[in-house]
Structure formats: C-alpha cells, structure tokens
Image 1 (cartoon, one colour):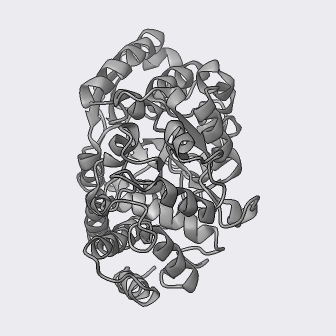
Image 2: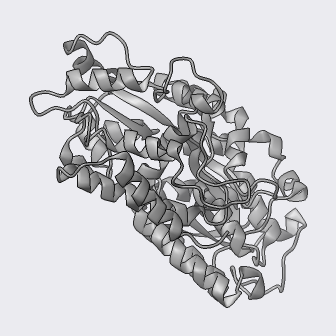
Image 3: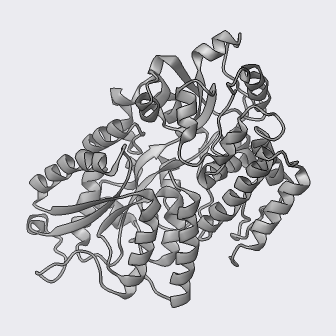
Length: 448
C-alpha cells in the first residue's frame, strides 16, 4: 500500500531527476561483475550475482525474507545465478529507487508499485520491455491485459512486468447484515448508503474509510469519477482535476463522513490500515479494500464471517466506464536499464513470473497471479479471490499512466485528506469547497 508521504518523495525526487538531467543510463550501476559484462549464454550465467530489491508484501520485512529466500535459492540451484535480496518497506522504497536513478548505484531487479510505472518510466531508469525482452520470459500474452496496462504509459513498451495483482472489493460482515435485516449486499451507491445507515448504531458504523491515506483517497476518487465518465487528465496528459464529475466523485466519497454520516469521524485520521482492524473486529460492517483476506485473518475474523462483492456502481448493471469498480492494483517487477547483467536479470524475472512461482508467491501473499495460466490454481478459487479476479478482468481500470501520476496522487490525495478533516471537525463540505480544493491541487501540478 502506498502512502501519501511516499508520493511526496516521488514529487520531489522526480523533479530533481528532471532538473539534473540525469537518468540511470548515464552512469554505471547494478551488481559488480569481475568478468566484465553480461553473458547471454545460459550456461555462462553461473557465478553472476544479482541485487534484488523486493517490496514488503508480507506481515513484516522478516516475513518477506522467509517467503522469498527459499524461492530465490531454487533459482540459484537452477541457474547458478546468486541473488542478494533486500526487502525494503514502502515508506522507503521509492526514495531508494529515485536515489539510485541519480547515483547509478542501484539494484539489477526491483519491485515497484504499478502506479509508479509511468513516472519511473519517464526518468529513463527502467529497461523497456519490448518484444525481444518479453520473448526472453515466455511472451507478453502470458499476462492479464489489465495488468500489462498498468505497467507503463500508453503507446510505449511497458516499463516493468506484472508480479502480483490486486483489486478492490466491498467486504461486508454477514452477521451484522443479518442482524440489521439486510438480505443482500448493495449493488449501487444509494443501496450502500441506505444499508450503512441501518448499520450505523450503538457505536458501530456501516462503513470504514481510510481518510488520511492519500493513496486510498485517490483510488476511490478515481473509481467514482470513472463511473461518471471522467478522467483526471486529458489526452495530452494535462490535469483536469476540477471538472464537475470529479467534484461530484470526491464529494460522494467525503460524504460518508460529512453528509451521510455512515463512517466514524475518527476515520478521517486513519492512514495505517486501521480500516481493516475496524472491519475485522466488528466496529464497521463494510469496507472497500484490496485483496484483504490475509490481513483480516490475522485479526481473528474467519473467511465464513464475511463476504466480498464488487464495489457498487451508480446504477445497477452498469457497463463500460460506468461499470468500473476498481483501479488495477498490484506490484510490478522491473530491471534497471544500466544493469551489467541483463540476461541474468531477465532470467530472474522469468523465474519469478513462471507459473509455479506465481502460484507459490501469490498464494502466500493472498494476491492474484497476473500470469493467466496460474489463475486456475485451486488456491485462487476461494470465494473472495474469485470475485476479485472477476473484477480485475472485467471492471478494473488502471490509474492514469502519465509522467505526473505521482504528483496527482500527492496533491489530490492530500486535498481529500483535508476535506475529510474538515468533515470530522464539523465544517461544511460543499461542491464549492471541493472544487476549490481540486482547483488548488490542479494549479500546483507541473506542466505536462
């Protein structure tokens, strides 16, 4: 999960990259190679050493090491290529990546949040995945199209390869619904608000939101705007934040606290996944979240106590943009452009995206495999994951893949955070105040 502070570092560091005119191609980096260069003959890759920066997908950095180390040892046994693994927390990962693009002292292979793809692509730091590169790992058509669409700017070769996929669903507490006399989960937003009002009683709330989490704010505002036929950028990449559709989308989201009063005022301060805790402990009857089964279980709630359905739409049965219910969430695997071990790096990407490894890794982390062949595995046929897989393939859309996407997340995500704070403080949140906040964010965007 990305945080707004992470996006702030991308804004500052990307600006530094642009100002200095530096990219990873301008200087050396990656693991050292005493043999003096890459070797493409598979038999001659033995003895090379890769540096791999992995993101924190498990319950802790140590948990990720426990998950990944045995798999990377298998890769070494198969290829003779050694891997130095470093797991980096989300609060530091992007800052480390951007520092590497300017210093040239970076990893060979790295995980990136898929919403970073276009922004990092614009720095020139990542190896483009052209037809030849995809051929080396088994082909582009092995991957779900939605996941590929979130791997770089439209019209360009992807900047990374999908590794873990996720999608948003509406999680609901079955007992709380039954106790309130609600037979079925909501399909439209009007139904959700009506149900949530019935469920908001006695210190319990119908819905939990993560009001101080800029990324969560962006993800939901993006979906609500998309359902109204709106994008946050025009075809040239210019910001169009304060359109009537975007204003309505943001107001609808903030109104869960401000107008509808179906989420607790304290949710305006949530930024560290407290939403999951409230849902799993019965304080809130519903939440909108990405692939949350593992986290819910860790809080003591069993899978039979909740259900998962697609996030509501404005009207029942909506299709096209009006039927979008999630952004395409996930983690991509990238290769630094200046690696001295391109063939070895491609071999690691091939291994990590192989069908057996996709089953193991995504099964462990509770995410969905972007590799189509792995999706039929029984591990991904649980009721919740089947719903999320359907969402990912039929009603998910990627966040804008533009160079300034990170600034969009920072500025608009923070604007929504401030609006939630106003709502919690009892200040009015109106169309005018929402538009003013979005206009201010738009004015702070760099030129496209």
